[in-house]
Image (cartoon, rainbow, N blue to C red):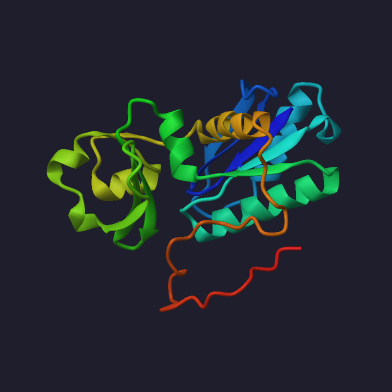
Length: 211
């Protein structure tokens, strides 16, 4: 049983999937504040509803961004704690890639990158890249886009879909990697930020200590 977490935006989700990546149960919610506080309780509730326990988990999958600085830190810390405590493999999945899998009709995935910028990933694989709000044309705003609810409102996106099924997509993508014998190193897996956190002009390159 694979458990998956996705918290790269305020629209967060968790999922439980079989080893082939087929979703068995999932939950999604919006957490504009206190991001990450509901992830573990909701995940445990999914397991309980299925009559399962953490000991039944065979792998942990997590969205690694780019996106919310706080959400990514909390979700990855939790995923690492589960993987270490249960002695299970961990797989990090690019969040925007999972969003596009969860919203097959969307042409591009957008996540907030700052007060007036977005992270963007198109289906052509170009990206993710950081773009100012002004770079999103009126025509693009009318296209089908997967984006968090608050960002869709800020950009007045007419056909936006929130990434509510993203955790199930994270699980499905992780299952493919696991089936091919792939997983990530618990000690070195880290969020994909693409840019320094707000308030920092530069981010020095140095090892990130998690454990």
